[in-house]
Length: 104
Image 1 (tube, rainbow, N blue to C red):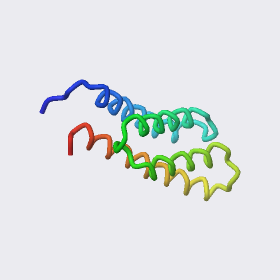
Image 2: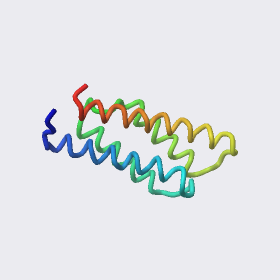
Image 3: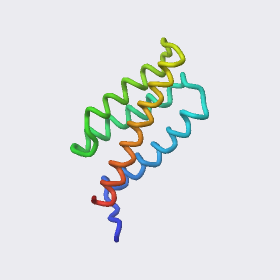
């Protein structure tokens, strides 16, 4: 299988790499960091530039969970729930991105 170096494939590959980095970041760093919001800003831009790449419902749900986790106005159990939801959403991004790169 060959890999075409196009702007779409390159942006998708970078998005996958940064997504893995965010998963690691979420479990090793403080939860109230602003870096995940920068990541989600880039995800929204990616989904707007390359339409039909990521499902908008998943993208905006991820932004909402990141905002809940960033401002931390909730209890411990709710934070754990939102972390789980965010992990599911990021896993969906990884699966969808791999599917786009592998042309599944």
